[in-house]
Length: 133
Image (cartoon, rainbow, N blue to C red; front, side):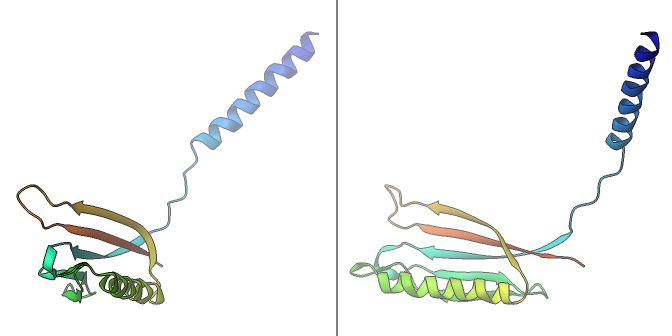
């Protein structure tokens, strides 16, 4: 009986030692990425007088702006403009993914019209990442 107890204690100690070795081993470093982002600002100012843009920065740090159409015209919301903007935004996403960028995160924000102002904007940020070799 004492012999069996000694083997059981030895087994428990050996298991504990092996587990403690694994708990202190170095973990592999996660993949490294570089990031790139573009933003869309879409105006909801009545009458179509707002400024809507795709804003991005190229590899050299130069800001690039591409015009988008405003959501509202004099007659109200213009679904043709919404469709046009969708196409331009998807084209920009396709341009980035073609260059090896992965769409990683999309963040949206809205500045709504208030009692004192009838204007507002939709802001969307598209964050891309690419693995660093």
